[in-house]
Each structure stands twice: as C-alpha cells, then as structure tokens.
Length: 175
Image 1 (cartoon, rainbow, N blue to C red):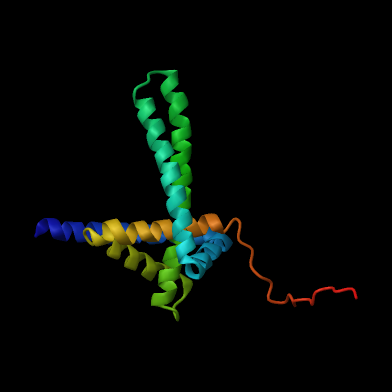
Image 2: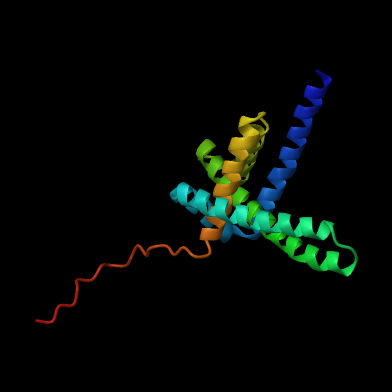
C-alpha cells in the first residue's frame, strides 16, 4: 500500500512539473503550439500517420546508430553517436511541441470557460494521470497522444490555412 501511495504522489509531483513545462513552451512559442493544437483537432488521423512514420524512422536510425557505436571505441564511437543524438533530439523537440498542443486540446475540451493557465493545467493532469494507467495508458493513450501531437507539429510547418476572405473567382473563359 505504501508503494501505491508513493507512486501516486510521484505522478502528482511530475504532473506539476509537466504543467510548468507545457506552460513555458506555450508562452515561448504561442503560434507553433496553437497551430499544432489546431491540426491535432482538425486532422488527427493524418497527424497520427505522420507522427508514426517519423517516430519510427528517426527512432530506428537512432537505435541502429547507437547499436553500431556500442561496438566501437574512441573517436569512431563519438562520430557515430552524434547523429544518433541529433535524431533523438529531433524526436524530443517534436514530442515536446506535440504534447504541448495535445495538452492544450485536452484542456480546452475539459475546461473551455477557464483561462489558458488552467486549461493547460487540467490538460496536463488529465493526460499524465490517464497515461499512468497500467497497460492501456502506457501502450495506447500516451503513444497515441505523442504521435498525434508530433505529427501535427510536423504538419504545422507545411500546412497553410485557407484565407477566409478569399472569394473564389469564376474561370476565365475567352469566347
């Protein structure tokens, strides 16, 4: 029973730290997080697919490079480890922005009338406690949220919004 209580307290403490992290990311990069949130809401299937492909690709490259570096010594190990660390850094940045967008989306759906601070806090708590559920949270919820968020973050660099003031023009038919 003591272990369960300490586990719950550890998750609560980590959730507060995550909420602060997501608030800082949202404060420093408001447009990127807003676009990521909007794309995760607008096209979750496509975002999941893009996140899955990129996560597997960069994760596999990092795994292979680290496996090769494990068998080398000296300068060879450093030369092979640097690209692996670069791939892991790209994954970390994508997951950070992606999960920030997903936390915003969850918080907006849970507490739409609250301020942005409380929406982020509620979204972080919901995602972190939901992801702490054994098996379902670990292997379904967290990977889904991370991959959708990372895919939405990647798509946000290429996606252009349709201008609401653009009026369609009739085709130019010279007779």
